[in-house]
Length: 354
Image 1 (cartoon, rainbow, N blue to C red):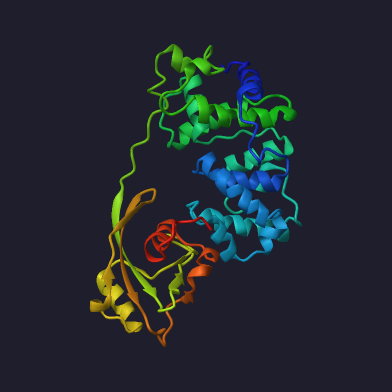
Image 2: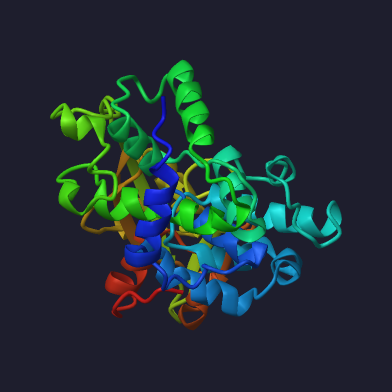
């Protein structure tokens, strides 16, 4: 049986000790939705850097919907998980075209937006519309597993269903308490009930936490098996014109860096050499650069760039390729490792975020 004081304890703690300075702590559903998408698998400190630039350029959902995808991806560059940006753009157009420019107020309606799952929809509904909806992200799962000493595989659907039922049973009675309660769950998991070295002495649940009483805080929740990380070799063809312009191609919408602009990228040296010859560059004219690595969720990219000066554009254009003058590179969404490489090694400047 759940403790009836859980919500009361959490709301009281959040109002006294929780985070209140975040710029998206408003009732505007656009701002809440934008922040929730940005915060998926991304630290608050990072989002605090991107969110103001994004809202300055796109102050409302209509502005975002009217923009081109390249501009959206350009502002998102470096934030990672680029499918979020593509879905964000699609969802903005959904709001305008399907919902008449107004965000749905119910969780079920919000779940129809591209890139919005149950927990994200619930957070938007709770913050913007004070709906009694439960969230269940990684932080919340950890809090619930510890406070109620629930032992199970958090990746198991049956156990997740149990956690959802518990989360819903704990909701406060008054909708007006939902922003503080929902923010409290997020704050508690992020700042107190941390994965390692939780601050149990500062936790509002310390008196009712069953994991603490049973000395199982380090044990719960059960840790997921570490993902197998596969090394993926990649070869970049970094072509510059005598005037310094760089050849970029738009990546396919799916896959690594989908929709961003990148130098030609290959999985073999043979393919790279074939592409270089279209520009009149042969293997003896390619200068191998020091390799660099970039970690994705389940892959470690081992990137070896080959640089050369090209004197002409091939008659048969490569995909969506174009020459971009170095002063205009900031207008294009570039993968972070390429952004840092171009500014740090080729252009001789310190990396700057576009």
